[in-house]
Amino acid sequence: MVIRMKEIDIYITAIAAEYSFRMDENTPLRLLADEVAAIACQKEQCEQPPDDAEPIFYSVSKRTILDSSHTLRELSIDSGDKLYLV
Image 1 (cartoon, rainbow, N blue to C red):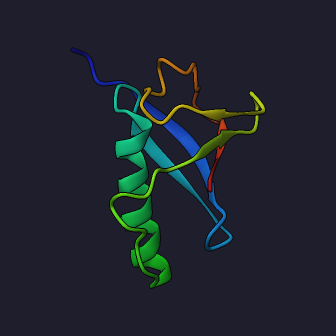
Image 2 (image 1 turned 120 degrees about the vertical axis):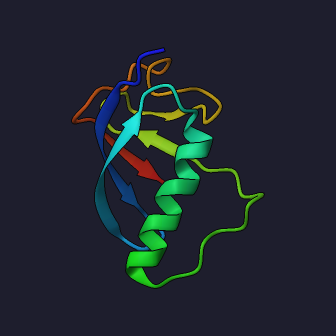
C-alpha cells in the first residue's frame, strides 16, 4: 500500500490554536485525533483529553461534522483543507 500524506490545518477549539499537520490519508480520524491532541498539548502544556473521549471533527469546506471512524481519503479531505477539532 502506498502511503499518501495530506497537509491539513486543524483548529483545536479547546486551546484556541491552529496547527498544520501532515497526515496519512488512510488512518481513521479517531487515531489522528490522538496524535493531534498529544502534539498540541505537549506544545501548549495542557492536559490531553481522556482516551474514551470521542473526537469531533468539523470540515470547514464541507460544512459538516465528520465521522471519526473514516479516513481522510474516504471523507475526500484534501491537502489545504481546514478542520476543527472540537
